[in-house]
Each structure stands twice: as C-alpha cells, then as structure tokens.
Image (cartoon, rainbow, N blue to C red; front, top):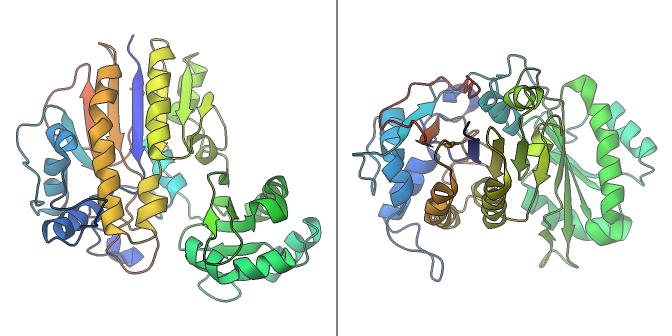
Length: 386
C-alpha cells in the first residue's frame, strides 16, 4: 500500500472565485498577478531574482493549465501544454477565506457554519473579552485593540510594549485574535499562557484562531517576529482525513503548522521548522521513515506570512521559484505506490489592497502512482481517503 502526501502551498491561489466580490476580492489572482508583474520586470530585485516567473517543475505538472482554466487568462511564462501530472483547481465551498477553513476542507470537512469576526473598529474587541483577558492573564492592560498588519503593529506599539509590558492585541479580516509580545521581556511561555486564556474566552464567539506572535529586538527599527509563533485553533470537524487515517491505524506525520491548524487532534508525529526550506527538509526526512500506508500532511507558510501579507511581489516570486527547484527532490523521494497532491488553502495576492487573504480558487496538482495527465474537476472538497 502506498503513502499519501499533501503539501499545502499556503496562500498560493489562482484567481477566479465566483464569490470573490462578496469578500471585496473580485479580480484578485495571486499566481496570475505575480506572473504578470514579473513579465513586466516589476518582480525584479537585485540579489534576489529577476525576469519572468520561472516555475518549470510546477508547470510540467499542469500549473499553467490550472491557472488558465481558473481565470480564462493564459499566464505569461507558462507553457500550458503536455503536463505529466493531474491538474485542476479547487472551488472552496467553506465560508470565509481563513487558514482553518481551507485546510479543513482539503481534509474533507468543509466549514458550513459562519465564523465569528471582530469589527474593523477601534476598539475591535468587546469590553467583556478585554476585561476578562486582563484579569485572568494578570495583565497591566493591552495595546492596539484594532485591525492591523502584523508587522506594522509591532513597529507601532513594540517600544511601548517594552516599557509597559502590555501585550499587543489585534485582529484582521480573518476570524482571529493575535497577541504579540516580546519573547524575552514578556516571556514566551507567558505569552502562550495568555493565548490559552484568550482561546477559552473566544470560544463562545466562534473565533477560529488565537495566534501567539512573539518578537525580539530593541527598537522599532529592528523588531522582528520569531519562528515561535503558535496557533490555538478551534477543534477540527469530525470525520476529517487525519481522523480517518488515525482511526484506521495508519501512521500520520504532519509538518509545519498543520498541528496547530487541527488543534493537535490526530496530527500524529508533528515536525516543525523555521522556514519553507526547513519544512521541505523535514518532509523529505519523513518520507524516508514513514511506513507504507502512511499519511503525510505538510504546510509551507512562507508564501503567506513573509510575502503575501507584506505585499512583496519579488519575494513571493522568489519563494515560489525556490520551492519549484526542490520539487524534483520530493518527487524522487516517493516510492513506487506513493501519491502526492499539491494545493493551497486560499489566496493572498501581493498586488492587492490591504494585507489580508484573498478569496480565490486554488490549484490542485497530483503526481505519483496512478497519476494520469488529465484535468481533474474538484469543488474543493478533497476527500483524499477515497
């Protein structure tokens, strides 16, 4: 019996969602707009990359065809011909454009309820929540209390946080409460404990995630978030792919933030590094060790956190090219009966307004045992256990 490998290229959407206008995202197209900007030379950065977007290995699996099918536009720099894998795009049926929604739907359990959201006001959080968090967390107070970009909010409030040791609390268009604090001055474990309290307080509001955002540095000029981020998610819906694999006695290995997204339920052996490169390395290591019949589920988050939210076209393009260059290693690590699926959970168009996720179709590329070069029609309920 072969093994299954799912790799989520976090935020690598391919445009075209019919309901994008409902989310303010009509016309968003993460991959397509990056390709267009690069073709015009707008994705060039000295010492990083230059010229058209080059993804030969992904294109050979059918990525260009998936992009064309999704939007009706032929993307520049893609051959769009003779794929050697199965290709298509997913239409998310879950509400919202959140990380949990996308991943849970990939695992066969789409979200059919409405998440709770905090409004784009200041303050953003209800008074009862703020009061309880301050009291139970033994805090001097909180800072920010608004919607904000995660990097900008630390620059804006980080120095005051160091003086007063009040955590920085903010949200976004996602169903999330994020809490940033200095890893050394405030303390990493204390930050995690405050987030556990916030998780419990957010449960009645149906908030999808509470995220700990530790950072280091001395001034706004050198503050930087660390890799010790931790997500405190609502428990996943029953009957998802991980639960079924674990229930069947199969070995489960999860890489990156999959453990956090699924609230560490049926996530097996969890492997976590600091970057996409680390997570590819960990996936390769797991492929050498995982028994036949096992399930490996990996998330590569740098596309989203480092470049999508920061609206960095050149960085996003370079990140895509770096993954593409490693795809042959992953393909070579598969055994004869293994099968791999590459997909995404939502979009995050770096050419778009604001700093939030974008509602888009997602590419789906399959290769390995039994793969036939043909399109696959999927409305993103990827029931990969069948």
